[in-house]
Image (tube, one colour):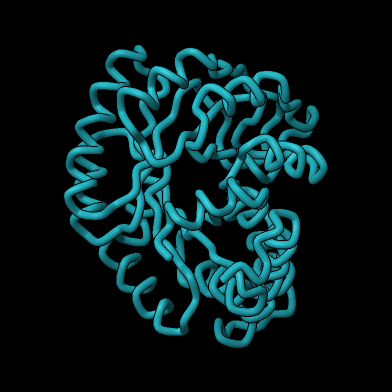
Length: 279
């Protein structure tokens, strides 16, 4: 199945597809290994920064090789800010793109998203839109960022006019994890948005900092895709720091421990999202 079919199936059946962001081969190997072990479809995400570091064409080539294992693996551009960069990702071979026009006036957001849709649909690429600004960044934050929650009426208008395949919304979630507390999901707002956009799969950004029970409840209210990045970065970095204390200098000897740690995080998220054995 293609990605949009998975997302629609997940929405119907009450589970979610996990998106796991990567910026190097090791993290991608961990995500693929978890997908293979758990028989779960997964999305490999790269932000503009991550894809600039890894390389758009390089990311496509790696995913193509891993797909030969028989896993349901999809490559997604996360938070594409301009049409030009999205075009580069599509031309390189990405399966899916996210246009983040959330900080633009709604009318301008709709206009650019429609342009993105027109380009992508001719090439069989799925498009994720965004209404309402999801704050934070994929790191450890000192305080909870200011949020601009999605209005149900604006989400309804956006989906109706753009016909996006999926929609990222702001309902109290934010990128990163904060020592000041966990995100407080506005489930009433989420329920209103889900009703307004009907069959359009919703996307929950900031899956690292949200408690498991809140994620489960959000999935039950229409979230069909959950993004995870910070948890993987923390696991990777902390484990790498730990293994390097041994004095080992051979990467292929110390990196397996790092990969295994990240893989375990992905496996736990797959269990939480209930996407296991969905291939």
